[in-house]
Length: 247
Image (cartoon, rainbow, N blue to C red; front, side, top):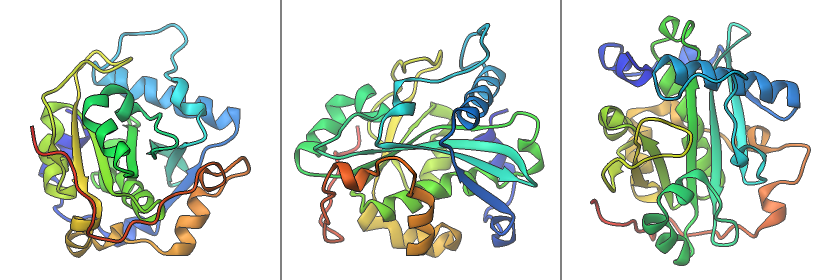
């Protein structure tokens, strides 16, 4: 059973007290990265999403791009899950979702849109059953990123059996049928949401997805170059974003 599927039988609302226990750690050192790559390998292998590999790690070229942020989520001091946040702008468009679904996302970038692309969402196969609310706690970072980078579109690249979770929680809509996806054996579909239009509706249902400006700055500030130093992020007024129609 997958991580997202498990939440269907769990609580409908995540508890804020669990958020008090979580540590979001921006991964920057090589040692930290290797721990995340190993976690990805174990998680994907457990779900049959990849073939066994001798090096027992899973990384790709997007891990080292300046418009990607890798996070480790720690509960009880233990690495429990991870997600990578990639941000696509017209000036720097290279993210996994844009690479896999260029026909759907490149036209939006051509309109000047900012796309937040959370990907490589994985959880420790052993520890994830201890925290049924882990998907909410982990994917909260996607909404934090959308707010921080003034996103017009939030995406999710998911397997068909996970679409219901993203529809229910994040109000994502599928834009295409599942397609082959690099490094994975199972096809993924692209889902997306008009973030400015629907964010308040999501916040009303899941208040823990809200964040403060201070938290956002702390989470996405790193020692190397920041995205804001590489490109001038456009400041779009709320409510003016559009998205490709459902496919």
